[in-house]
Image (cartoon, rainbow, N blue to C red; front, side, top):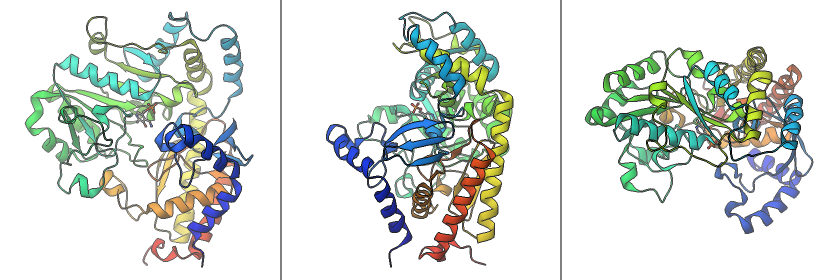
Length: 455
Ligand code: PMP
């Protein structure tokens, strides 16, 4: 009998012939045919032609209800009409000046006030913001070591491309993980200055920094790690990190590249812990490349010529600045985010009900507009508890959802859904109906036994 995973993969292949053809051509000119390795799908990536509102269309013309929303970059949904209008005007009047644009101070003030930082420096990608944060922390403290958490991702630069998705065999079973580079080509000299600890485990952090307390420049973390699904911090964990930084003189850095667009005041607004620096990106640019390093004035003041470098041709280009201003002031407003968060709650509750009714071995973890479903019977609190989620079943679920016209979340069992301000109640209902059908199929299939909770 054809297994459900194979069956769904074959259906997908039949529906996406043009993607397959584009891939054949693209891979001649680009390794793997994509420009971010995370976009690769087996046996080939899908290629898309159009996005509008809550929907995407692939190169074969298949329509999808989209809950990936460009890995959380589109809290405002695709081509929001208010933004489209503003961008038309912007593009007609110049896209880059080689000087700052006249409205730059308005955007900087808007970001500072909303995300409660004193000052900011803008660039284009999340990677740049965390890279600059690390450099600034080292310069400000005149120390070398940076602590990051296993399973957290901060962009693909060397200091932080460590223990992003390590196997248990490599990371080891002790409280303090072994250092595992996540790419070849990184120098040992750089890795020696990165310390790794387990998320949600303050003992692991204390142990990891024991011999380096006086050389600790900063602790960087996703306040809700969203590169191992959706992992809220345990009560007291962020506070304990704040205390440790105060005791050691290290800087606390929140990587809010994902969270800043998902909560009106970002993670600080949600959890009440104030870091020294914040990095932001994705949704605040409304789908255009805009990222931010922000923080306390006394720290940010070091980014001046001759002290700490910060540069970039495309930094704060007028296109990104207009997109950021319109997004933050007119679209991703408190009211609209509250609306999307309510729908997000309904989606999470709907998933939980379906899982419970079917006695499926799966757990939903969610707050507001975002959340995920892990195929496991326990809560995921850190990378090690993520490692035994049923990845194969997740891919079958994902493929089966695509075949029913729903992109249920960003690509990968380590990702999550984003509900945008353009999603509707009907979109949530359609998503849940598709999930219900897929669960029925899964239960009928050969994988059913391993997925049903023992009762
Ligand atoms: N930080 C976090 C938390 C991220 O999730 C990402 C990307 N997914 C980055 C940084 C890097 O951002 P970018 O891809 O824009 O460089």
